[in-house]
Length: 65
Image (tube, one colour):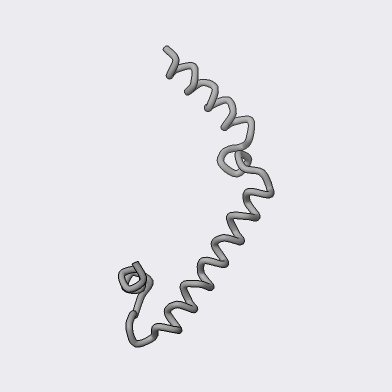
């Protein structure tokens, strides 16, 4: 019975916040964008620095781990 109550509560919360878009605050959304942008820059720099060793991020992960 507890699971049904939780499901009902989450459904109400989801509808009230207009879906996934409304769940996280502006700060969290901005942080997520910033982390994604920085991650892409780091990956590009690693691929540039190790040009001859890796052709993709998957190969790069194997080299640095």
